[in-house]
Image 1 (tube, rainbow, N blue to C red):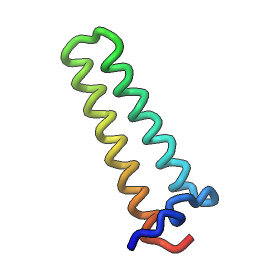
Image 2 (cartoon, rainbow, N blue to C red):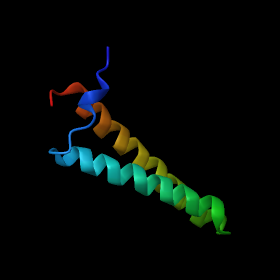
Image 3 (cartoon, one colour):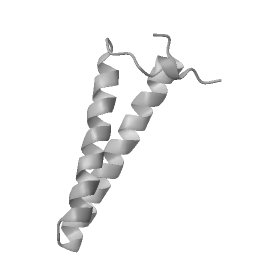
Image 4 (spheres, rainbow, N blue to C red):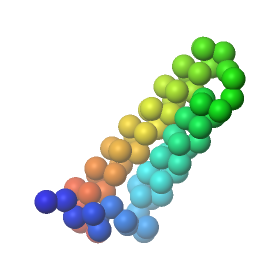
Length: 68
């Protein structure tokens, strides 16, 4: 059973990095969907956003698997 309280650990830098990466991914995907970009620019920004989201999820998993 996952204890979601373990995710909120503001004293650990991994928590804040996870928050920043997930917020940046959201902002990048908003840019791709809102502004008319060339296909290459959309692809590059989209891949970067997905990479940020993946790193954020890995950090979240690490926080969930460690003790607070």
